[in-house]
Length: 124
Image (cartoon, rainbow, N blue to C red; front, side):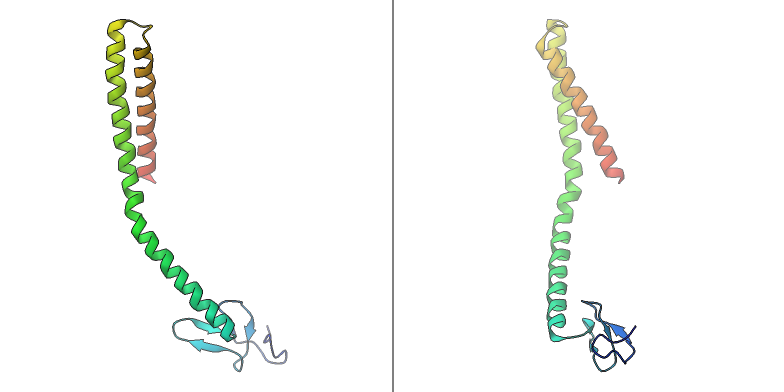
C-alpha cells in the first residue's frame, strides 16, 4: 500500500481515525491517541476518546442498576405467587367457579413464569 498523499512513497502506518495509508513524512504520532494524518483527525480522535470515557463512566454507574434488576424480578415473582396463593385459598373456600380462585390461579402461574425467567436471566 502507498501513502495517500505521496503515491510514490510506501505507507508505513494507517491513520487511527480514517485508515489512510501514511508515509513517514505524513504520519503524526501522539502517545495518547496514536497515529493520525491531520489536525482534523487528531481533534476527532480526542472527541471519540472523550465520548468513550463518558460511556465507560455511565456503564460503571448503571451497572449496579442492572445487577439489582434481577433481584426485583425475584421479589415480584414471589409477591405474585404469595398473592395468588391467598386469592386461590379465598376462592377455594367459595367454590371452583369463584373469580378469586381464577385470579389466584392466573397470578400464581404468572409468578412462577416470572420466577423461571429470573433464573434464566441470572444464569447469563
